[in-house]
Length: 436
Image 1 (cartoon, rainbow, N blue to C red):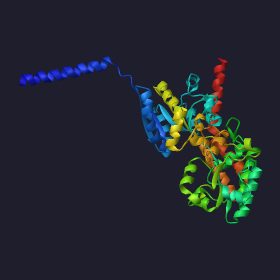
Image 2: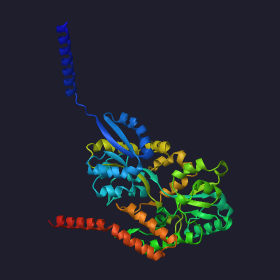
Image 3: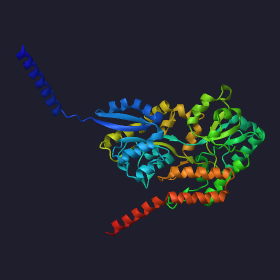
Image 4: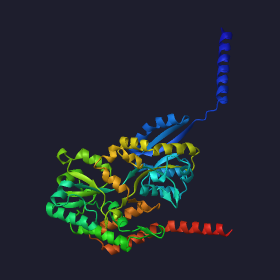
């Protein structure tokens, strides 16, 4: 028996060696892509990966989900620690920051040979958020912009069947609603703790927001000052309440009660309105593209949303691009939209009747054809916070408008000091290289 036992152990060892040898003779070429995504989108996109893996044998995708509140720091930490993912979802206002630290893979060569990803397949303003100095660093995944949500019944009662398309007409409609609704109610809710509204009006008036290639603030220039005066006049004339989002306990309830008849907000509120407004008001609200100073063409809005990027340090860039192409396909964008409620970036996806036939999303489709990026600088979120501070200080009567805008420019110039130094340094390096 002992001899048989020894024989069996030797046989097992031999079998393991044979198997190990067999494994060595058949190399495993499979790869695992690390894909970081945020919030609910991350949870949903994992459900789309089995189909991608079936189409691409040997490529496995490991989706890591993280909350939006932690995403920015985690991405920066991963870059410093040389542990970036292969592919990631990136808010399109973050693209300039991660491009500035050379974390992102330029995508021009991939796009040039792609049968799926073409710039004209996406909304122009949204695509532009991913382009820095004529190079593309991200592909639009889903989009976000701002339109007007309004009470159709209250506007009709005031004599307006729809939202006028010029600032002058829009303001007249607000005045009519105010007269109709009385002193204790308002025409529009413009939360004072949001930067989007004054920024949008500035873009509509032709302000670049920043000037000299994003080196200095342009808030006290005439274009932004004109838009700022229009914005302030809505508070000054009691057409908008002096209140932030935290001052209103339940904004949907106040919209239902007619406390305000208009609200500039985003696509996520289509679902919320359908869920939260009472049944008798479901036919009494609508959406409309933003008016502009001189009509439709000037009624631009923000080009927001998320993009898909490939990190420069990825060892699997070709497989990563296949994943980007997969997520960019119209049918996958539509599927993702149905799963999340996010709006697709692909224009072809909007031909589906679930979007093109939806009366509330139609305004978003119109608006998305006239959206613009906010300044493509890494410091844009800090600058946006400064805009909120400056706006609130004027709205609440603490500072005159001109002084607030001049002070805002000084703050912004200081924030951009490092950027100016880097750009000057790069220009000198280019000049030295050219002189050799």
